[in-house]
Length: 149
Image 1 (cartoon, rainbow, N blue to C red):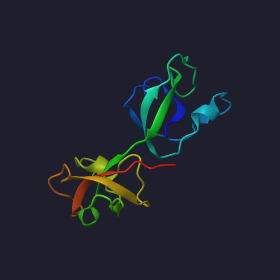
Image 2: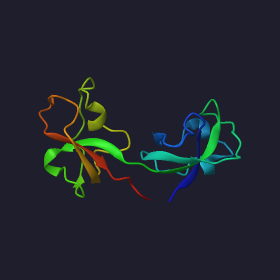
Image 3: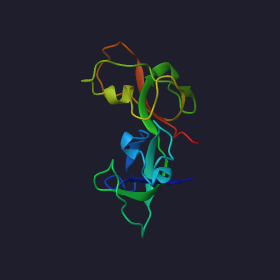
């Protein structure tokens, strides 16, 4: 079920995904706090609809203002240890990786997923984009189901 929230006008397009970062210090005293700060911090969301006939509201965080949109939790693409990579099973991320130049780094440390959590695998994509893992990990690229709640 979609949630109505306010996002920066640059994000207010159906299909745009973002990770909600929580409250900024610039939010203090804002009259729209209740409409803006209603998502779960650290969770990935997708804009599913932009509310029509709504105005752009001034915002201390977003320089072009905010608009009302509908969002739903979005899936997260990640690399997980291959032994746990089965559709329908639960898996965790392998752990932090210092090799930021690796083409898989964003999948090993994906925005919207935590190292200390388990996620249900929705789909297995297969081999990750790197040729070899500098940490000698056997990894498989998967899609985690969107988190609910």
